[in-house]
Length: 202
Image (cartoon, rainbow, N blue to C red; front, side):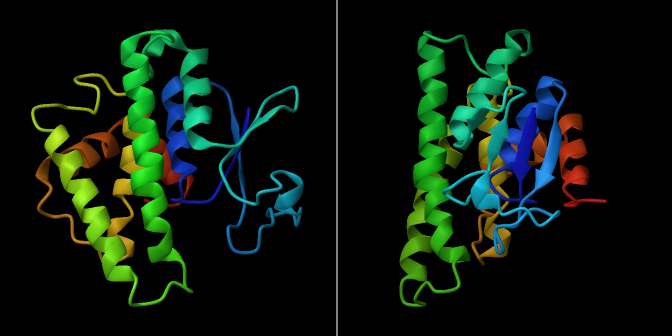
């Protein structure tokens, strides 16, 4: 498998899933600014929408959306328990978390990263994000991970977006349960390996 990624972006989530799964894979860096690969290839030829992540399978098939990609990866290695079994209520709970992180958190960070967002709009976005993150913090009380005591691909996704506040001036120091989860996930050997591979830590 081949993952098209950009360091520290939302593609960090499937990168973590691949490493946790122990599956063979390669990574290809795609610039989110120039939309080109390091060899000069136009990334729009890989994904006409122009964004990462993209997971390419051996037969050339491609998946584009992070929540779909991480579930596909998890289902290749059910013994790793990266996602509950398909059809179970727990699996729908996982999908609920992936949808929430993708729509309520990830998408709400976008205006804070975009250089053309009007300054008057940014405080509204920050307040919205802080409200959502405060709710997540409450949901994590008494848990090691989102689904309880077991790490899942949803935790990799939450870890990814919970790493972004520092870059957009969002103070989440009061959210102790969320920060504890972020630290717990960061300490996992697979996550350490991914952070090093993407140049995010030495």
